[in-house]
Length: 142
Image (cartoon, rainbow, N blue to C red; front, side, top):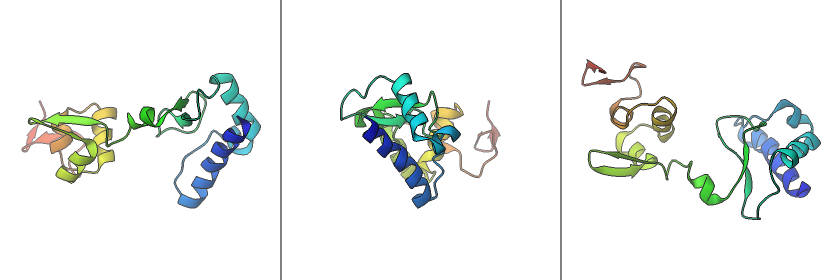
């Protein structure tokens, strides 16, 4: 398992350098592969199968203690914008499809409905540049 974990640890660090995207990693783990490996071996059970990958539970948080799990592609797909479905006005579609329809980025739609707790209607009809509190047709939200 050490070879697999070393690959994960290296990719986290390399991806940050190549893409410039801040997939932050716990400060101790940034410097010390053994600390990363030690945590995984103590906190998580052994890798269930070669179909499982080490992933972050919440992709918006760091690679940090309490935010790691073994997940298959199917497990990971449950968090993908293409698999999260919203139903509105008799139509059910993925976040990505709603993004194409509304012109609002899928990540914005996800943030509204999953993190901020907006209703599906407000999530889909509120323009991006509107005030923090969603409005409908110029009237304040009830």
